[in-house]
Image 1 (cartoon, rainbow over the protein chains, first blue to last red):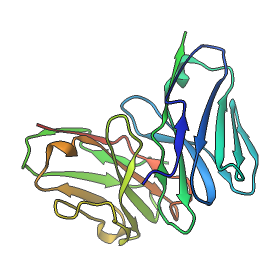
Image 2: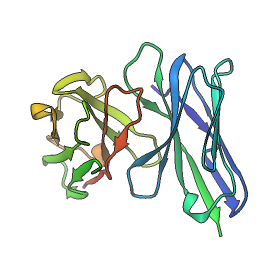
Image 3: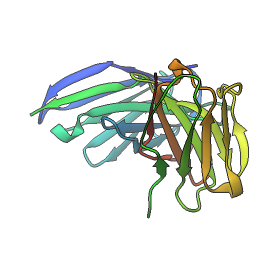
Image 4: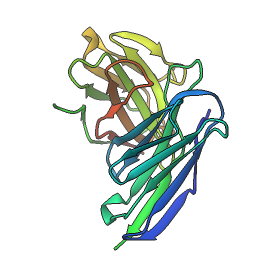
Length: 111
Length: 114
């Protein structure tokens, strides 16, 4: 069963613009993670935000978490062509012990 | 620190044949995961090991898929016999402890079943 759902499914922007991706989930969580996957490669962990945190930064990434709305957003500022990839949110549903991924957002940054 | 290693990177087989994938996790990581990623979808957990014991295999098609993690280190995933719908990327990941922690992924094995 799918826990997280990303929105939009695909996003195309110009280099230098900001990209925002959203994730909604269904059950309570301990934390929410964002991963990136470049074409044909494995996933790379970007950031983990705990349920008691509202915002977290890492370089050009900013993640917010709203547990009351069961949603998270990933903002990439000043995007680069190298940011072109699929982005997935993932959570461990409350009481569970496995990470469940959404279907992902495909980001294309045009140079 | 060496990352998660997987082999082979690509495999093409015919339906009803068997295939095996190998994974070597990051040294010292207790938990190892096998995911199946079908084109256009997110990874789906097939099996999760804690050391050499199975934590979750609820989504593993046990009539054709098997996995083992000998001595709590390397792991192999086998499909026998393969079906067309098994065409996917098989990802191995590891983490220091449980699923809530950061997981480190290998490059994956791309399987095509003809």
